[in-house]
Image 1: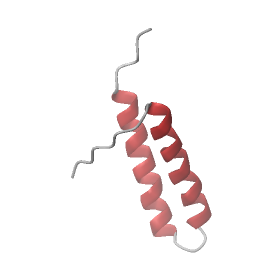
Image 2: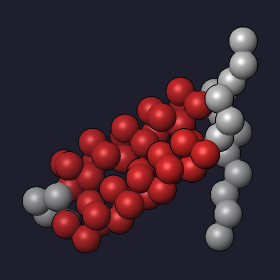
Image 3: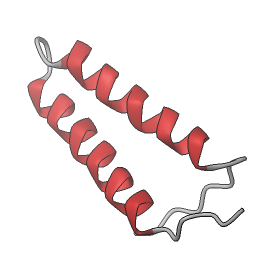
Image 4: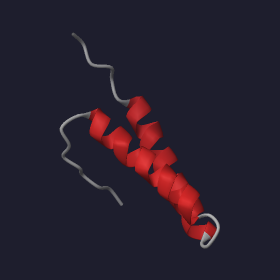
Length: 57
């Protein structure tokens, strides 16, 4: 499945990744499976961000 997100810049997406990781940390004690899924999503998004070309100035 593919998802198209329209954001202002990569900083917005980086903030979403940070939120997923923070949420996973909070969820770990009560729902470790959900926490692991959120971490996997965050890492997959981060890996995709790393593949984007660097902006030129």
